[in-house]
Amino acid sequence: MSVFSCSQQPQIILLKEGTDTSQGRAQVVSNINACTAVADTVRTTLGPRGMDKLIHDDKGGVTISNDGATIMRLLDIVHPAAKILVDIAKSQDSEVGDGTTTVVLLAAEFLKEAKPYVEDGVHPHNLIRSYRTAGNMAIQRVEELAVSIEGKSLEEKKSLLAKCAATTLSSKLISGEKEFFASMVVDAVLAIGDDDRLNLIGIKKVPGGTMRDSFLVNGVAFKKTFSYAGFEQQPKKFLNPKILLLNIELELKSEKENAEIRLSDPMQYQSIVDAEWNIIYDKLDKCVQSGAKIVLSRLAIGDLATQYFADRDIFCAGRVTEEDLQRVAAATGGTVQTSVNNVIDEVLGSCEVFEEKQVGNERFNIFSGCPSGQTATIVLRGGADQFIEEAERSLHDAIMIVRRAVKNSAVVPGGGAIDMEISKYLRQHARTIAGKSQFFVNSFAKALEVIPRQICDNAGFDATDVLNKLRQKHASGEGANYGVDINTGGIADSFANFVWEPSVVKINAINAATEAACLILSVDETVKNPKVSRRTNLLSIVQ
Image (tube, rainbow, N blue to C red; front, side):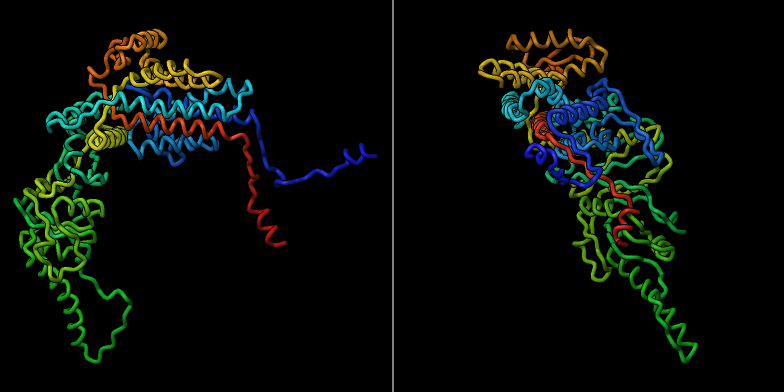
C-alpha cells in the first residue's frame, strides 16, 4: 500500500508550461562553449597584423572594424552567458579605451582552461577561489613591473605619450600612418589640459584626399552651416575678433500663438507689422552694439539678419550644433546667451584668428589661437566613408590611451611581454601551493599565454616556436621585457622597441576577465521563461 501511494504522488509544477530549464555540470560546460565561440569571432583581430571584420546590419549599414568593443556591440548576441563578454568589452572601452579584444580573449581562455576540471567533477567554487587569488597576484606583478614616465620634461613626455599612442594604432586600419596620427593625438590631448571631457576633442570627417591631408586645429572647427542670401558678402577672415554666442532665433516671426487681433481701423494693421520688424531690428542692433564681429547661434539666423550683418561686416552662422557651440564657448572664453539685452564684454569670447576655409568639398569655420585653449579638433580625410569611420574609432582608442597615460603615468612593455612575465611568475608561485589549487593557478598562468600566441597566429608566425623562445628568455630572469617581434617573427625587447602600453590597460583587462570568468563559472542553472504571444495575452485579459 505504501509503495503504491509513493508512486502515485502528484507532480509539483513550479514553473509555467514551456519553461526551459537546464542545470548542473552540463550547463556550466554549455556556457563555457558559448563564450569560447564568441571569442573565436574576435580572435583574429588581435595585434598589429590582426584582420578586420565586415559587419552588415539589418538596416543595410556596413561597418568595417577590428575594434573588439565595436564588433561585440554589433554582433547582437542573444546567449545570456555570452552577453557577459559583450559587457566587459564595453566596460574596458569606456574605462581605458583599448584592450577590448584582449579582455574578451582572456576571459574565454580562463574558461577554456577551467573546462576540463569542471568536466572531471571539480566544484566551480574551488576554481573561482584560485582564479581570484591568481588574478590579484597578476595585478600586483603588473604594478611592480610598471615603469613611471613622471617627472620628464614636456618634450620627453610628448615623445613617450606618442609611443603609447603608436602602440595602440599599430593594430588598427590606420597603422601605416601611426606616427603621423600619434603626434596629432598627443597634441590634442595636451591641448585640453586637465579637463578630461572627451567631447572637448572634436573629430570631423571629410571624405576625399589622403589620410596625410588630415590636420589638427588648436581650437574649434565645424562645417559651414546652412546659410541664406547675403552670406557670401560677409567677411570670411578676422584677426582678434569678439565672438557672441546665442541660443535665440534671429528671424522675422509672425505671431505664432494663433492670436486673433480685431482692428477697427485698417491703418492700425501697419503698426502691428512695424512692431514685428522693430523687434527683430532691435535684436540685431543690440548684437552690433555689443562689438562682436562673429555671431553664432544654436537656432536659425534668417535672411534678413544675414543681410543686416553682411552690411556691417559681421560674420554670422545659425543652426550651429549644441556640441560645437559648447566647444567654441570653452575655447574662446565666451558664454552662451539666451537674450541680446545687456550683452557685456565679459560674456563675449575671442580668438586670434577666425577664417572660413575649404576642406575637400566642404567649407569649415575655424577658430584658432583661442585664449582658454581648452579644446582641439581633428579633421580626418580619407577615401571611403567606412575607412574614415574606422579611422575615427581608432583615434578614439588612441585618445583614451593617451589620456590614461597622462593621468596614470606608468607603462608596461607590450607585444605579449607582460603576459609572459606574469605567466612565468604565477607558474613559479603554483609550485609552492599544496593541493588542487596548484593546477588551477597553473591553468590561469597558461591562459595568459593566449595573447602572444594569438599575435603570432595572426601574423602568420610559428606560435609554438616563438612561445618556446619567449618562455626560455623569461625563465632566464633577464628577459622580462621580451615580447613578440612582429617584423622578424622572432622575439625582441618590447621596451627598447617602444612597444608600450599604460599599465592601467593590462590591470583593467585582467581584472575584468577574471571577474567575468568567475561569474560564468558560478552559474549552474539557466531558466528561460516561455515567450507569451500577444494573442494569448489578449485572450487572458478578455477572460
